[in-house]
Length: 127
Image 1: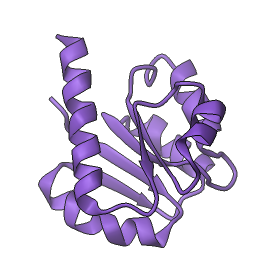
Image 2: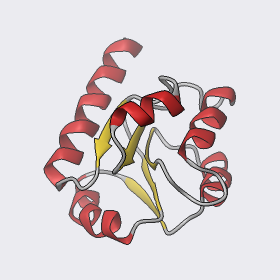
Image 3: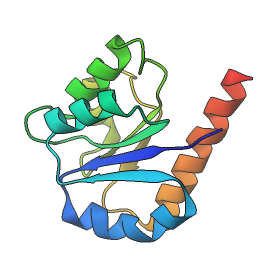
């Protein structure tokens, strides 16, 4: 069962979009973090799913994804990557290390749909 979702972002616009989503799920929101601080917090309190900005200071999205996949405790944690860049750019840099992509700007219902699809897909593979 899914319990925690972390939204790692440095974008105040993403945070404003996310606010109505959080009461419907058990979620930890990590606003205005650098990727390095986010990684430290993720290791202290592992989430079940990560919503990740592709471009963050200190540790960017590809570096965060690589760290997740190399750490046995986080290897299977699904990541949804967000960016205003085309997904082809993300796919090249992230080399298939993410479960889904959200193109900015996006609407809240799109976030909910993508997260639910990832949850369903992950639950099916764990059965």
